[in-house]
Length: 451
Image (cartoon, rainbow, N blue to C red):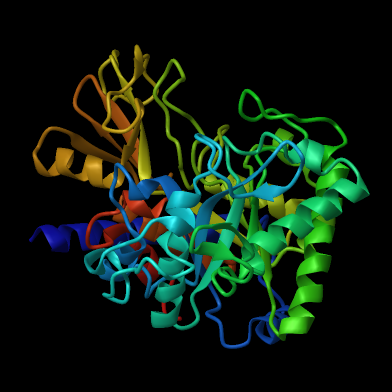
């Protein structure tokens, strides 16, 4: 009975989205032309028309004990087109690096840590003599099992964007950065540490590079450098990546993909991105579709609404990129597999838009909880699910604590939107937050239809 109710709710949500899209049709960008579709098909070959991207976190193998093998076990690997590995870092000299440095680099997790048979994709334990172990080797095994799956090394992220601005400052520094990243991750020339690593030891693990510079031209993490000229320098950096990746691709007779994680706020887009120029060199970009509001704010709010009036939203983000010249087919919509939470909520009602005393307690970080941590709260009857079907988002509230999150119904609604708008696909942050049976990504995959 419960499954039927959930299915019914999903259908209602999808109907709401369809109705809203019809209303928006006069102002929405036109669907891709026949020529554009033909061009994209020629570029994509036999790849699925809609990308299914997911981030795997390097640090998730520790406390969360989420291994690459879990993506195979929970069915997600079979649904993905792209696995983004978070993250690679850039040092003060402006180059990609992989040396032991607490908080800055973790080669042990990346390629040195041996895994036993139970945690290996191929069911065979790593040995003391193999040059490649750790997550990189498991990704290679995952790709061997799931033909067509691509792996991207994601560079930067919120904490590791510190040195991008300096590295992108001059033609020489940009060339040095790109060369170092391609050498390390695409050619697979890892630092030698005993039997691990060495020239070519990780070749074939990664099929492209994902730039997660947060943010060119505007404020990011506390120690992240930014300057006005980042906007033009980012364009030049993207061009340098495209040029060097294509040069290597001609040698290897393959196409190395290039993508980026890009922001939702108009101010950040305009400060750091020459959209028409960079989109010529990117295969696709992953749009920030979450953290519209965060638990550090004084009032509760939605973090990932599909539609919103006078507020950030997925639809608003899509429109912002489209009107600046981004092709719809290259826009991949990011979706959260976690919730933003507040506690000490007062004012009654359903809790949304009410004052709060601070971030809600959670297992890994205050105000941030994995979906698999939130789902039991509903099953145990501790929280009530609230849903705005027209806005396309959900939240949990128990009278004093509120979590705003995406559940399977909200994700399916967004998948319907992606298909209806002719967008490039979906992205999830992050895969370790899903349930043991991959409930969230399964809902996303189904909402996108046949591959």
